Image 1 (cartoon, rainbow, N blue to C red):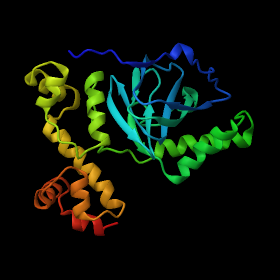
Image 2: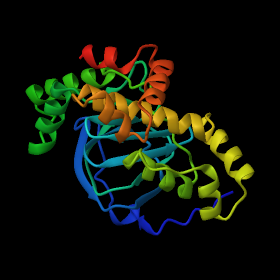
Image 3: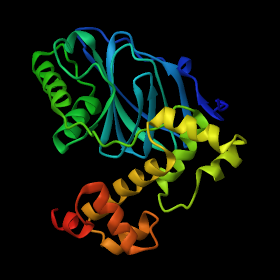
Image 4: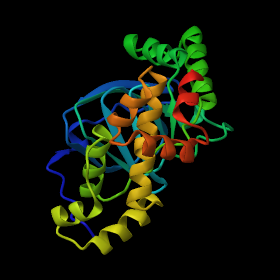
Length: 268
């Protein structure tokens, strides 16, 4: 077991949220945390939570798994689910706490998952958050219900990279998420953490369901996907995610996505 002693720990008792009642069924707030901040284990008994990342990155760890989100992504956390989170870089987010009375009979909101924040969803969140709408008002209530509807229908990011649970391992993984071209092996990490490579490999597979090499390859492919989607050339996409050989990158990309990166790039 790795040591779980975060250096920068945020105490939830110092930041108590207002209670969310059934009439004012959405409570919103903005947060900005410094790089390296951990939030201790907690749960929300009467509400689900949507954390929409507006800048930076975050990892949410829970009994249902661990998820990673960045700009234009949001993490849905069901009511009563114990979780903690980590900010590897300075991060800002908008958080919505939605009373369970407004979530009845909506499928899919009982599981932790990452969703894509569309322009419409982003504007709905902002419109409620910026002016702190009084949802007891009938017109404002309708806007709040539309927001919940959009959350329930949002595209789930099924290919989200699985994250580990151990704090030190999360911190190391997020370093790679921020710099996927970094050359590192599990042996390098085992020396840094002062545990055997065999033990670390077992912990990694237990937490993520993937061995380190497969996890790193998926990370690089996802990074390359975003680069290509943004108009980056195939050669630059390969270099940006750590491939020195263009042929090796093309082969890995084709194996992962079923087609070469040039075809993928033209599809956007």
